Length: 210
Image (tube, rainbow, N blue to C red; front, side, top):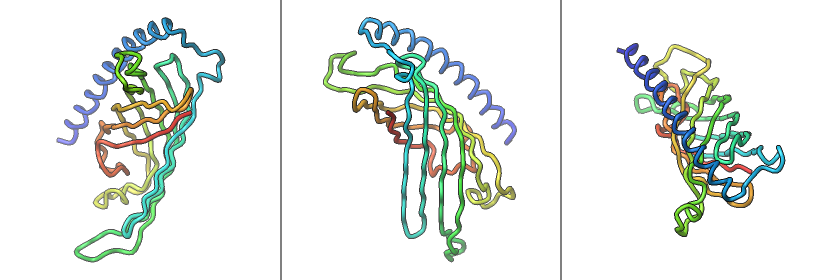
């Protein structure tokens, strides 16, 4: 049964990848035509580069978590980018087993990722004439994390190792200047990995780029 599910997951990922590529090509073509009409161009190579990431902190009686996720990328076209990211997470947690609370257990997660983003609508005000500045963003990502698998699934007999995930989704892209922007993303882990360090699927993500 597990083998069938794995094969279905791989097949779904392949189909989704083709759909994302086809959709991206059509959206980029439309976006480039719109940009040429509006005269928006990259004057220098450095204008194509962007940096940013996210930071998270949660402190509680049972769970303490710190997340740092830097990122950098390049705009291939004004509405299509490619990039690389890194991730470090520290987690300290107490577990409840048979009514008893364990002593705090710590773990560290390290990771790298590659991603692509398409912004088919950069500004609703400019495109549709409504009083709403900002647009839709589509996101696809491959993330590989090095973690203690037994920490996130206590029934597992495996220790530390690499866990791979495919994340796809979208959200809202809100410019806050000529270069900076805030992105609110909802991402689904297509593998639904049982060792995932994320507390939910879909995953909510908030990033800042400049």
